[in-house]
Structures are given as C-alpha cells and as structure tokens.
Image 1 (tube, rainbow, N blue to C red):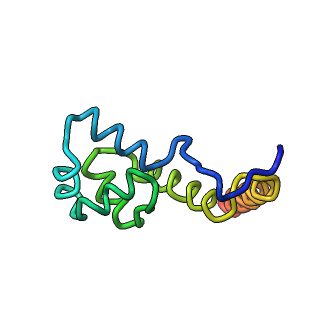
Image 2: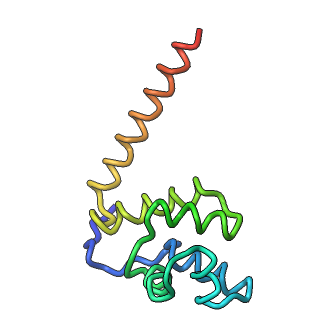
Length: 115
C-alpha cells in the first residue's frame, strides 16, 4: 500500500458526511438537529463539513437523536481521528494490525479465564 500524505483531504465515509446525509434524508434542518442534540448550529456545520470532529459526549447525543448505534458512530470517530492524526499509510496499517492482534490476544485470554 503506497503512503498517503495525512494532509490530503479525507472524506471517504467520514462521520460528518454520514450525519449530513442522515439529516438530509430525514428532511431536517441543521438548526433542528443542533437543537435536538444540544450543540450550536455552527459547530454541527463544522462537524458535517469535516473541519471538526464530535466529542464522545456529542456522539452519544447524536446517536440517541438519530436512533443510531453509538458503537458504530464511535468506531467511525476513532478511525477518523487516526486518519486525521497519522494519515493513511503503511505505518498506520501496520499499527491497526498490531492493535487487532493485541485485541484478539486479550479476547482469547479472557475466554481462557472463563473456564
């Protein structure tokens, strides 16, 4: 996988685009959703445009408002934070693989302890 500069624009399945699409599909205005999730409209606009990421507390309120999986939104948030911080490149890929290996190792140890 060739390295990608982290300064490049990243929008593939971004959480902001995802939220804007849901809002538009439901026919709600930015102001309506912002009021419903208790954040100001300019901040929600920044989140939708990808210039700001929501906090985990905001994710909780957004997931509740739209009846979405909080886990799925938090997963999108974490992956977007990783990409914004480190970019999409071989090192990031290898780091994710390492996390995956550690996770499954912990999961296996937890399963072994249950016997």
